[in-house]
Length: 132
Image 1: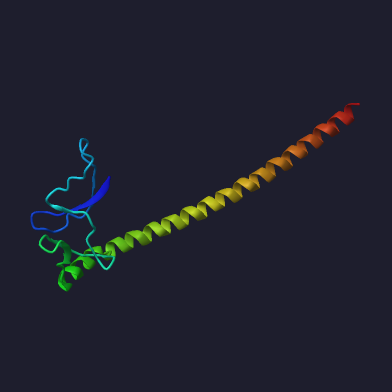
Image 2: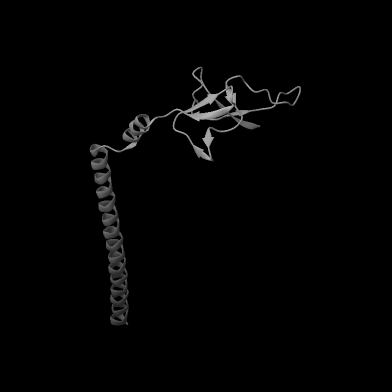
């Protein structure tokens, strides 16, 4: 198995590699016409909008600055998302505080129960001593 990098009719990379398996009869890899067997990179770095130049057998960057900036804007969170994230952070912090308070209350109850058991045992012991 090897990865190939398909492109559409416009020679623009489709965005995800595909696994290619050898032919079951010959064992050879049969490359489809619309794919390259090397990733869309220049100097080891990815590209914004790779175009495959079939004549030169190389990937070419076709994204201009306006295209890159438009994608950056799409990736930036809006103020509503940031507000929601801040709200979730506050909820998480409150949940942690509530959990800590519950743990402390549970420990306190454990101490109180142990103390009551000891007191009960002492009372039972005193009661037995009075009968004898």
